[in-house]
Length: 482
Image (cartoon, rainbow, N blue to C red; front, side, top):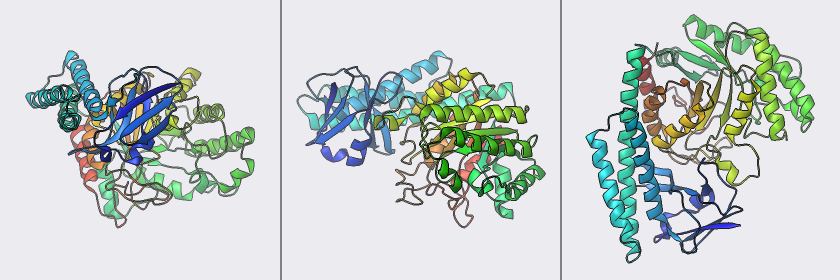
């Protein structure tokens, strides 16, 4: 049994919500299951292993809002660590290491970035030399150092995107990256024009719950019309996800077989086969299954859920040998493992899929940024690093995004959106486009009033009002994509 202790000179800076989501992780960033105790400004995390690790905790950063901030790797010790100082150290360490890596790869570091990094370093040194005699003053300086580090991160990510995109465009004047949004219904004429201007592709969700309301009876009319609408406008189509094991996507009659993995798999493959047969040659990409790492509505263990995804890929490949097939996983940081006793991380699921050698055409990473359950708010550098980790699987990546345009309370069963994150996504999009192994970017929710949608996660409001992010997507396509 191991413990890691921290103290916060100003306990009001640590909310109970943040405490409940704090976790420790090792070099690979995989959370350890832990127990958290918070009282009188002292934070204690207890886990089975005594290994060194990094603390991750949501923190309100001045000018940047709430972000998950991490320490550097720390060893266990009796004396508690000064929490703001260690968070400042970890943030500064991340930006220094990443800038060194990118500089070594040929990226030019700008003077504006260097200015922010120098200030962050000086403030941290001042904090580190005062925390024993003046812990309150050290906390103030550490917080200022964090803000300066995040300014540096903002500039570093923008410079990376600009320079990498310039290099990519030298190789190809127009990039072939798929840029899509989920299309649940045929949009109005005005919204349809905005959609066609912003996206070169559309995701046709092919909801099992909607298509097979009664076992063995398939109703396709709605999706036939959606596909025709896209094809007449030259918009490529991605079908799926066909399988998603949550209440909003499963037909009611399937619950009769809850816990019966064989019968559930048979029913699922019958639906996948029917969809693939009907739309073979009409889909540019098939999205076989989503969220198999986190959804467990039918009481299937991890192995059975993975098997379900593998079987779906096999059926799709037999029915349509041309279109690539992808399987996607959500919550890529696996924050949920801090509270749940599970064996597979999202990347372990994906790695097992790659090892089956069934000819999967790519891996999808779903980032519902700023929602819980979902992805806790992360900065541009951390998202970029996570995407880089997934690229090691050696398959093209499809990044699926949702983020709220403003914070909100619970709606449609979704807990509170932590913070408005579409502003962050505006800066993230060029970073994603700059990565050659990201072959597709998908916005998961077109409208705020989408069925079972996430609060304020659309690109259109309930009344077809366009949000600013749609303008950014339109500009991104116009300037970069074929």
